[in-house]
Length: 348
Image 1 (cartoon, rainbow, N blue to C red):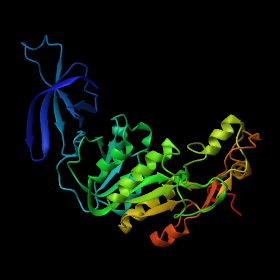
Image 2 (image 1 turned 60 degrees about the vertical axis):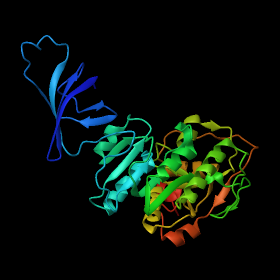
Image 3 (image 1 turned 90 degrees about the vertical axis):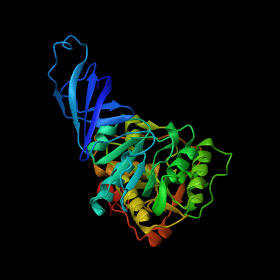
């Protein structure tokens, strides 16, 4: 991707044709970033005149169709927003699965993905997601908005959530994916959607999430508190980390709660379609397991050659046993993977 400057622009019948001068742009380039905008390009070298043959820059004619993806910090293009269009703030693993399932149910809809950087915009474009950088103000509103960006890269997480809320037109649904870690239970006791939450001031991590949830509810959006997410046998799961370590200094009887990424996505979509206002829901598989039980299932599956040695911890807080029967009844949803054992293929 070269450093470019634009010298001329002509728009005709929804297509844009312009001229760019590039310091280091080859005819094999597929995109350039200019004026906060990523342009998908088709490049054809221009015939240089004798007066310009000594120029350091190489000129290309650029033809960009109406599918150009503009990544402007002030929002997406000013085209008409469809009744099923979706904005995903934080299109990571969960957001991309939501996009895939949403498009299957709403063919022809437009899906937008807002990110902190342009690092993965080419991937999003290839998936049919129109990417944009984090906006400085909401200039376009969407009927469906899901916020699934983590707080780790945000300097003002509740503020980012508020900005996303301003991008919702109030017609469809606005959903925020939070975490079940907010529930104040550490004795392996039972907990459901109405369980008590960690008091403000006890933990900076839960403070920022509770403040973000408050913003969502004030705007009439809904919150989905998710249990521990996993997606495959070899990636994004506590069992993978434990296998790599071999021995882990943690309590084996600490109860954990799980939900597959695909199920988290399908629950999110079911909630969006319900158009519910101002409620908190819970996402889990209703089969809580201790750390030891998880690793016993992994060993039983026979899918790993590496042997886990065990947990050596004897103290520390315990977990909670989540149950989301209320969520399932109200949303009308059931998971594809009823338990981690079903996912591993060892359910009895």
